[in-house]
Image 1 (cartoon, rainbow, N blue to C red):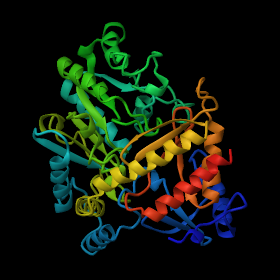
Image 2: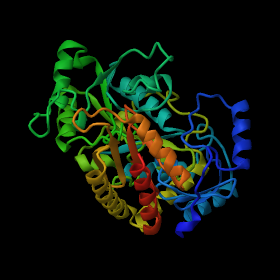
Image 3: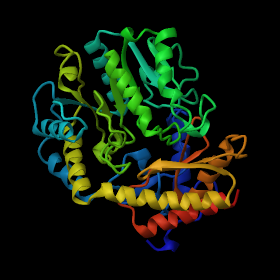
Image 4: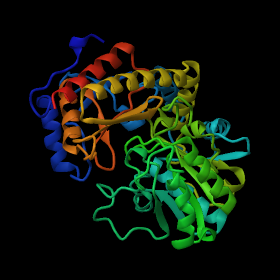
Length: 445
């Protein structure tokens, strides 16, 4: 893509068609649905988006991690069209169909662990998390669930309870679901215990033992749920040993370990699932986002005996495992493997880290650079000693970037992290141009 093809916006909203759509939106759509940019999409391809006014943008957000194989991947579109010509909906509870079964079998094969597995398909990551917790409680006959500060697991009542961030997810929506407790996460840049890795002895992981002694007995805990790399929490990567300790304690206490791979899965980190980096084999995994290649789809994959625990009719849903989404997902898996997108994710991540670290040397506002594979972010701070979060500055960087033709999203408990979730099919030229736009925005602070 030629450098001159991206937009440079001087106003707040790109053009008259966008302005009209946003006026209609203000009248018709609840204000609580957040928008990070005033861009109204008309078309997209690969790693670029064109708005209704004809402006083109490089996409570093990827629909918040949904488009690892890119916008409108040819193979995915073809699979969808072929399925549309057969049938649109049947409901898996009424008649079975091959795409659901084939995809479930494929996910069982891909998920970490040599034990027998089974998969249920649902509509969204939030729904996957809900079902994983239901299944864990049913299987263990225990009620308690432990999650982590900074984590994000969805926007339903149970999921915001599991989520370890108050803003904007929990405020005003209480009381929340009982039986959920939060543990400190291995946020090494802001250690909750004021220590430094590796001399910290992983107190954040070992704290779970104290939790059992003072807050909830382990015999009442059904599951521990965690993102291998926290997404909305700010792309926080724990030390490898963190999950080694958590996994060991769970096994010793008969607690199920649930890995939330909704944002980290499907090649984003350079492995099919981020759990593989930590050499853990979760009892259950929640999968979503890039699973469907842009279609509506999520899954729970887990140990067969755990997944089989609920009685017939206890889990499911009318649209779960929609045939169009299943066919799209099978095409996504084939595409990741044929194009070796796992290797590509590592290559993209190396370039992102190299460029971000170079920026960090030049711009004091960048306090930390972190990530695995193509899941890389930078944390902005007003002072590297105090680590005061630079939330307004992060919002400015995102705004400045889209005005210059780059769509990029923020994250973090303190809303001060710039994260990259660019499609893995992005070209070298697009990646370089996007990074240059991003650096220009940071330089202008």
